[in-house]
Structure formats: structure tokens, C-alpha cells
Image 1 (cartoon, rainbow, N blue to C red):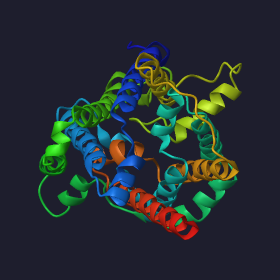
Image 2: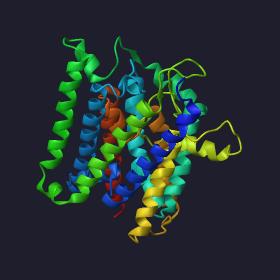
Image 3: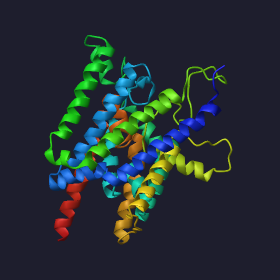
Length: 370
């Protein structure tokens, strides 16, 4: 008889914490910020942090699909490449998440990094995003999500990942995994390093490569280390210590909700620390350790009531948008993108569009008031 889920769970949880700790520390040092990447591009024409984000995606694509081809993991068992194509949810959820992360001064992962650095505004964003995410998963917003947005779904005969879709035109899925993962992965990495300014700053390389590698590591942890072909208790396939019951990589919207739930039901022994909950704690801890070690830890609060309100609205939109779109700038933008899922690519574009539009609105508002 193989190991039980209870025996494997600690390895999954501590591995998630360790990987997230590294991401939190490196994200703080390298100033990895997807909202900042869009802001630099829209407001200053600076693409370096966007290149860092694309480098992370490229590394994750090559890593995840390399593991898939080697038989270590099966990406089709994650939530991203399934045959139900929720096109409206991807567009609406992604766009609103982009708006929210701009109003909230950063996406879900950046919120956790900023908390570790002493930012009290991000604590408020965490709470509002976590509550909104929970309401969208199981509450009143969930009824709207399922009853309205998810009605606009297309049921495909194959998975929505690009290799599966391309295989319908001819050739094997394995062949298309090789072709498309190399095409996307190498193209993104080459684009990142095409800039001399990018190459000259090691932090850009550090942030991009480590983030992509951490996401790849997440797939290994849940899809290989935590995978049971047959749970001895249920005789069914199982992915240990994941909230979805599926293979997971890093994402930072639903785990905010699960973390708040765990803290609120602390004495309920049926509640366990999952991959997602451990990742939230790991990012905050890693960022805090770096901030303290580098003496960059600073307490920061709200400027005024308007600043407070904007961050509250931003958190709400991130919570709703991230759940509706099945992920955030890390969850869909890197983890989902690494599976080459069409929905993840659409969500990525919708998030960037929402953020860019909000920045243009902020600039217009600022010039009008000026």
C-alpha cells in the first residue's frame, strides 16, 4: 500500500511555503510587479518590467511543458485547459481584475509582497479581495458568476489548450506541445533579452527566471509530489492538499479567501493548511525577511479617505475578477499561460487592457483636476 494523503500533505504544504518564500523575497528585491509592468509601459513607455513578466511566462512554459513531455506531470488535470471555454468570464473577470489591481496598487501577489514590506494599505486590500473572492466562490456574487457569466460557455470536444486545438488540424498533441511551447517560450525569452537595458539590470533576470521557476516548481509539488494515482481511502485519483482537488500551481486570489476561512475556523480540526494557504504565508514571510534584512521595511498607511476608498474598491474588484476569470496575473498570467490554455491567454490580455484603461482614466482625472 502506498502513502496516505495525511503522510504526503506536509511535504506539499512545506514545499509550497518554501517556493512562495523564495518568490516573496525575490519579488521584493527585483520589484516584480505586473501592475507596475503595465504602468511603466503605459505611462513612461518603459517595457523592462513587462519583459520581466514575459520572461517569467516563457520560463514557466518551457518548464511546465518539458515536465509534461517527460511524463512527470499531466497539465490536463489542472483547471486551466479543460474543455469548457468560459469566454465571457475570462474577458469580464480579467478586465475587472486589471481595474482592481490598478486601484489597489498591485495584483494579489504584489499585495502580499507589500504586506511583508510593512504596507498597511495592502492589508486592507487583502481583506477586501479575500472577502470578495469568497463571496464569488460561494456567496451572492457566486450566484451572478454562475447564473450569468458562466452561461456564456462553449463546450469544446477537446481541451482548450493550444496543442489540443492544433491537433484537430493534424499531427499529434505531443508534437504540438513541442512546437508551441518552444515557439512561445523562446519567443518571450528572446523578446525580454532583446533589450540592452534589460540585460544590463540583473534584477530583471532574477525576477523573471525565479518567478517562472517557482511556478514550474508548483506544478511539480501538486502534480507529482502530491499526486496519488489511487487514494487508499477512496480508491480514486487524488491531488493532496489542494483546495480545488486538482493539480495546482501558484495563484493569489482564491488562496486569499481560503486563508481567511482557515483563520476564521482555526479551531475546526477538519480544516487543513493547503498548497494555496501555505503559498500566501510564504510570500509574506519571504518578503518580510528580505525587507528586514535589506532595511527597506517601512510602515505605510493611507494618504486620505479617497486613497482608502480606491484601495477598498480595488480589492473588491480583484476578488471578484480573479475568481470569475479563474486566476490573476500569476494564476492565469503565468501558471495558466504555462499550460498554453486559450482562456489564460485571453485573461492575460483582458487584465492588461483593464489595467491600461484604468491608468488612462487616472491620468485624465489628474490632468482635469490640475
